[in-house]
Amino acid sequence: MKKKLGRGVAIVGAGMSNFGAFPGKATRDLFVEAFSDMIASVDKGLDPNDIEALYIGNYSSDLFEGQGHTAPFMADWTGLTPRPATRIEDACASSGVALRQGIIAIASGLYDVVLVGGIEKMTDLPTSEVTDTLATASDVLYEIPAGFTFPGFYAAMATAYMDRYGATPESFMRVGLKNHENGALNEKAQYGATIRQVMDSKIAKAKAKGRPEPTWADEMEFMHDDRANPIIAWPMRLFDCSPISDGAAALLLVSEDIAKSFSADPLFVIGTGQASDVALHDRQDLTTLRAAKLAGEQAYEMAGLKPEDIKAAEVHDCFTIAEVIATEDLGFFPPGKGYEAAEEGLTRRNGPKPINTSGGLKSKGHPVGASGAGQVVEIWKQAHGSAGERQAAHDVNLGLTHNVGGTGQTCAVHIFERR
Amino acid sequence: MNNKDFTSASFQEYLKQKKLMGVRCQSCGTLFLPPRPMCNHCFGEDLIWEELSGEGELTAFTTIHIAPTAMIEAGYGRDNPYCSGIVKLKDGVSISAQILGVDVDHPENIKIGCKLEVEFLERQVGDDNQAFLAFQTVD
Image (cartoon, rainbow over all chains, first blue to last red; front, top):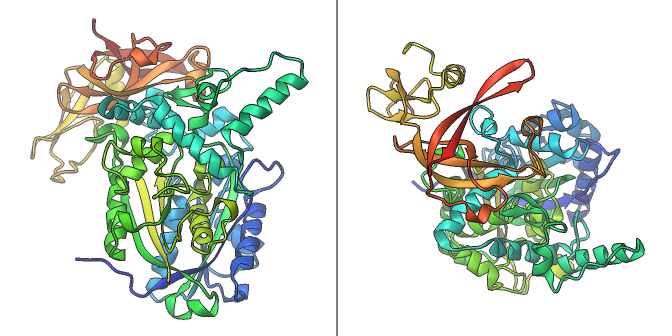
């Protein structure tokens, strides 16, 4: 039977902190920035006292910051105690799932106004400990003893994908190039520079230090340079991997019947889907994420839409291979054709199916628990034509977000409509 | 030997004895690797340990240069990468493991589908001597 929400839900405000490395700022400080940015986006104004509950996506403040029980602090720092504040943990899908919980809470009739947040503060730890912390989102009993890391899991999917479909490491590099082109136009991005700009800055640095200047013929030669773009887990190199990031995002959800009193142009939630899956080694097919396909199918069915109807999508490109697989799992391109679509430029912001106009996790940054809510901020901007220079070429009245946890053991997909 | 709990602790004990053990559901016949205490197909709890062939092939892999702490302590890292992969056993089940005998400096030459056989590694982890599952290429 077709699933539907008990009543309609709309997003009437969306904001985020800058994504990056912010020594000295805790998640609560970043969340206040996101909260203020969200309030500024509510065009008819918000009295924060109207908020009834908070759902906060956070992967691991415990291990990253030594802080458990994070949600009440977000309520306190935004002046929202004693309202119920709940933390949702589903690895990197934490705030996509928090969004879904906020939607369900309003659809149930319990609340009319809900704050959904996403937070993560990753840069206090050295890289090896960040790697260890992220690894706890996989199977610590059977996958970690094999030496796997998160870049390693997605790299393994990439080898299976290349073997089956004939993609090459260059196919994935093209995704990174495209996302950096978009991220260069996003003032909140952590690595908001095109690959060309990265190259120029490295050349300038070498010149300033009197070192021999690198002589890359073009971006692809730079991408193949083991020193400039080292292998992290083959075939994933540095510029195939999302960075270690701090950041927060905040979304204001209200019931459909009151949405117009907050915003002239609410973003209606017309589809939501979520699914789980087994560990990577237990899957029949390593070139697709079953949870993403199922979450997508649920969301499309609820929305009464097909993949071709979606005007722009923010997908979970924690690694470049993940974006390729996502565009296939969501039905934008047939299995095995996603890499060709990326190579042909179909996913650029002036292409027929703009993917990750924000720069994606790759360029914008990936504060893991904040990423799912951060994706919605971009769809909000694209839907309202307020994405500035990175605005998609066509009108984005229908947008989709795809937020993955771990190796795809969780996926949440949402579809939004500006009416 | 067949009355051990169907847990990772038991699996680890078997690894120390150089045995790769799965668990079979005696109600529906499904074989599990890793072990689990309840069949997730028929919900049966009439299970039995079963030693696996240890022969399989590589279905996905990576060579890891930025290593987690445990592998750094084992001597791996940027200058000494290692291969991790997923192995499909003849018995029909698959598992994650370190892959030995492949050319980690030329990962483009590592072949998906290559034949592998089980190998049992031991490493000191803190004060413990722990067993690790690995697979070695077969020439």
